[in-house]
Length: 165
Image (tube, rainbow, N blue to C red):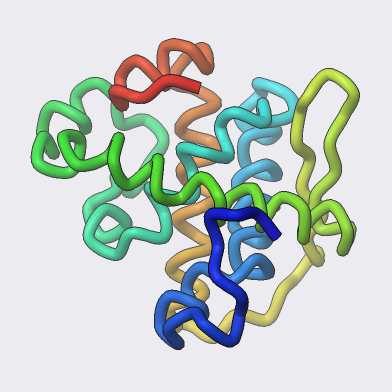
């Protein structure tokens, strides 16, 4: 556990459930699988720190595009209110993303290459109830993983969102 995170007994129930390491690891696995399917190879580790705050923030998730053909700069411009708040949210998510990565590596749901690329390992046909928030989150994670894979380099993605690695 990092110094930035409270013990599980001290965490509020709601933040503990949406920011739990198993969910974050699942989000990263889905994003990594779809990133690979975008033709860009394994997902760079740095992308994890963009995916999680985009997907787990309900308002942002609701306004994500429905297709990876949407241009990232245009989406950011059209959702300026979300983009302005993103750097602060991304910083607050860092310890949770780190915890999720550690959990994912231990459980085998994600793996990390020596070059720092994340691969996801998800069941071939997970049973996700239609209309469930979990399904919405994981679907959004896949979309964002593929979308960021097509959007350009990691450095450009970070610049567009106004954050630094």
